[in-house]
Amino acid sequence: MKMSSLQVSTPEGNSGWIFSDTEDFTFRYHADALPATAISLSMPVRHDEFRRRELHPVFQMNLPEGYVLEQLRNRLAKTVNVDPMLLLALSGSSSPIGRVQVRSETVDSLLEEQQFPGEKLDEILTWDGTEDIFADLLDRYILRAGISGVQPKVLVPEQNGIELPRVTSKTSDLIIKSGRDEFPGLAINEFLCMSMAKEAGIPVPPFYLSNNGKLFVMRRFDRDDQFNPIGFEDMAVLMGLSANQKYSKSYAAIAKAIRVFCPAENVSSSLDQLFDTVALSCIVGNGDAHLKNFGLLYSNPTQRDARLAPAYDIVNTTAYIPEDVLALDLAGNKSMFASRQGVLEFAETCGIEQPKERIQRMLTAVESVLKRYPEYREQAPHVIIAIQQSASHFALTFG
Image (cartoon, rainbow, N blue to C red):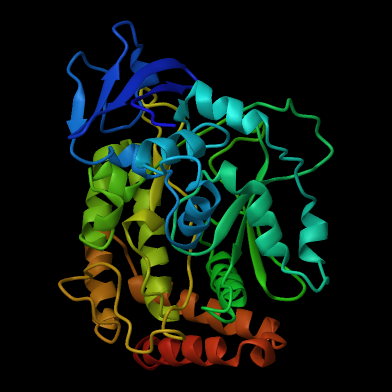
């Protein structure tokens, strides 16, 4: 199954085709493509084709990585060549990130043979069986990949009493993550850090922790109330960078991208949210707040309504890498220790007034959440200790 071309569309209509040959990947808009069918804020409809040596960043955004990619290769390697075009056709057809859909008749027929019955959220959260429910879910839904990131995760359609056609882009989906044995307590870790973000007033999607503390579940935020796709692009895409360049820029570059792509009325609130998210990441010891963990939401490229997406993927990394550093440059430095001064300089970049008061609000949120969930101190003591140690430096400076 070697694919050299794939059809690309958006909710506003057909966009064009992506082609691959031995040297390049080329995207070409249809001659009659409308401006609203643009596949990226940085790739407006035009006659000239977009050619790159690697897959275009907006397409890379959907590709699985790490553990999920390894499992997908194990599933398919005996029968097909698992190359970027096949991965794109799989992840971009059934339930892609954002509003850009990528189709292949061959993959469509393959997916039609699969059963994706959907799962009930409460059954996932209360699972107490001996077998590994995450491994079972991944095996069942891996061909609906559609989600990037190194951490083991799977996109699962939710059974919620709403009858949906079998093949449709309108799905209510749950992102289910597991730390596996590699990262003990990771689900609890993310639940606590995301709870701190919510407590601090940072917009976050709905999220949950399974009763056994092993699964972190989050609702996707790139769909509206009717499950229609909403435009989403992460910062690597907006900066024209490949996924492996996600650690290459600075938090100031994200602020600049917000000013470039967001309309004037959304800039201030988006920069406020960016500052709060970066500050909280520094406080809780999150060394993985890279370019792909920030993004913009919008309706379509002609509407000029882009805004910063809700915060996601906030975790403490020093519980696993004690000497970890920041994912991106902060005021000329990646040191977590130096980030106390760095966030104050970053506040100036974002036009934030009274940054110390905002940081104090973050510290209060951290303390409140840790008090609210004392049971996790026994289940993941190394995580609690790591968060407290990281926050203590900020408490000494700003408390």
